[in-house]
Length: 135
Image (cartoon, rainbow, N blue to C red; front, side, top):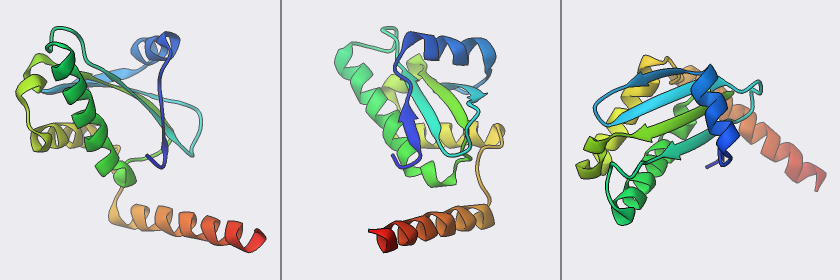
């Protein structure tokens, strides 16, 4: 994931739960709070034992992470987010999880427009060219 770090510590998750706003749909719950930076996002994924046994929980975690990775270029930067899987997520396909995650991002107005995505891509390419010239 290019613009994303992981939330790993309990206090990081608690901060997002306590300070952030939440939105939910049938498969997922999204907690969201600004992280004070404008150059990266931090993502945490939580799948409880209510969803299923360890194999199912791992599968759901991979589905969520891959769904996020596939739409990462379209998401605004500067947020800490925690995605929580609900019980219905255990039987969901990749496309259903991807659609649910996109729905949550759209409701929170986190998806970039086409022109904003192009601007971000141009900045990245300019930064890469600058690094390669200095090397």
